[in-house]
Length: 494
Image 1 (cartoon, rainbow, N blue to C red):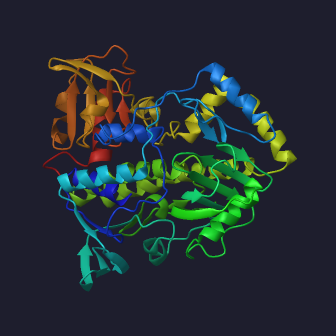
Image 2 (cartoon, rainbow, N blue to C red):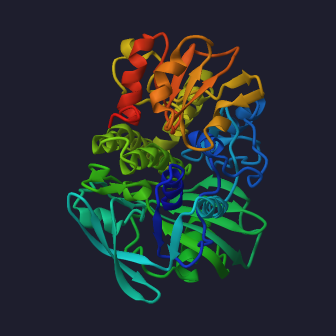
Image 3 (cartoon, helix red, strand yellow):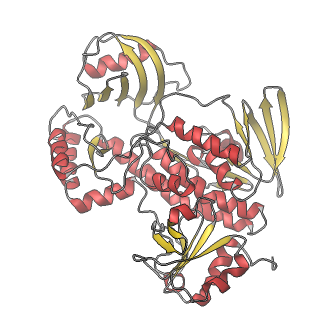
């Protein structure tokens, strides 16, 4: 998440340095797609355009029923080839309303690196932060680089250094949660018998086996406790043992090309801010990788705190704005942990869970239940508490719709207007006087006058992260208060 956060801050003219331990992007099994709110985030920043594969569309009702029939079999083969089928707990029943983008995480990292370079972000690859101290004004970093150790001072430090974050540990932020009960592997590997098992997703007596052909790709999950040593090198024999136990065959692994080991421990930092230190992405929360929530959750963290950090660094806003990062994002992280714990519980082997999965399948065939769970899994339900709706408008705290706006120079989407990371005031009733009210914030907020046939309100104030901060029918006289709350005092008065 470091590059995404760096880009968000740099969009507002704030210099950023990224320390990246790895000398280059690591091509190991990671997330394989962008879903739900993460797709919207990419769109609002103009990322992955022309890079992503063709979006996949939701499955039909007939396909959904066939998937459910597969789930009712004792040894469940999930027909992943059905377009748009997305799984929860390895049940391919979710029907997303918007397309997903099937791209390896490494391509996203490449696109972010390109954007960071365009924005002037300094990325120091092969440099590792080994320690830091902070006071009321600065953070002092100890860094190991290719030419030896050195020190650097900064106003703020964002720890985007993963689940075993050094930044989090040194900041003293507690990281409570639950230990893992599984050991899993994601691997690209060669085996001696490509017909050792049918391709697909299968629940087994010991856990879960995923096998995909061309080139052979595997995911295994066993409910035998967490790995004894997650840092130990993964041998072909270790992975082969998991394949044999789950498949019931004597398959031999002849070569491991890429492999990662994982578990399902679920932990969350008690706060996402400690003085001048912020925690973002996996540094703030860890959980099971199933359904790929980590990338989506981390991107949401980055776009939430990035513009706030920039506003504080530019002197537009006080540091208390950064406290809203924890108050807004911590509940989202906590719910993700709960969803992932539930997902792991539903993948346990045994007749009691078999019965629960059959019941769950019947529920997900009901449209309303499917919509609700899909919205939860995709982070589409997220809303932030931004105050009394009667004073700020009923849409406040919700993600703004991607409206199509008609202007004199043509039609444009809201997402396209936020590619530069700035806030928007949409005035959809020309002559309302809102532009004059917002003029003192014109260095931070763009006022757009347009027409829209499906507008949910006559006027909306949209934060850089896409969430509505004010809307009609709130009294227009309350708009300056909303502008000052989120974007600081008007120009010339700070």
